[in-house]
Image (cartoon, rainbow, N blue to C red; front, side):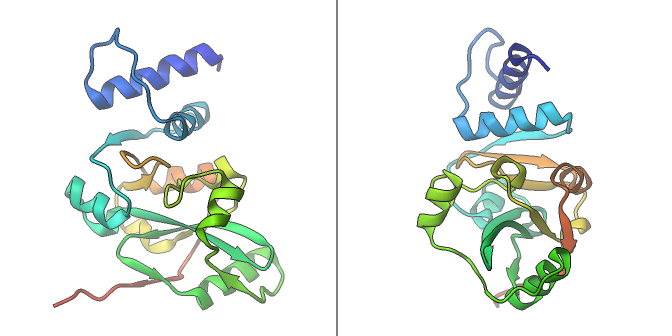
Length: 193
């Protein structure tokens, strides 16, 4: 698709979200515009959602009045020397041992060390602000591993890489686009009484 057409489509998405006049140019944050361009080029059906500034999937769910199980949170994981984008429902915690087994099986080699690297790594390696990682590993040349429990929701709301926007789409479209590995490595959080 020509660069001009992509730019026009990004503007159309921005106008739809903000409900602005068609002739007014809307400036999306660069990371969000890059994501929308990526999705448009791939021909993936999605909705761009604008919301108040949030820093966590939990806050995004509260702001948009959505269930935590419909919200995806993304984590950067280092397994030995490789990095992965790991996607979980917001109401799940990560079980590192289960994830280690999934990565080992998918890669055909035994993973010795797995961890969540510090914020400095995210900033330097991925060129993103702290906590503003998108769920779309393809934008960062990262393999994606998604929690199988995300399949329970009709649509999932994914972080966009910006603090005021999220992307809603079907999980099957996300998995196909990202060539994601589905596995069970999340543990549902217990509700506080």
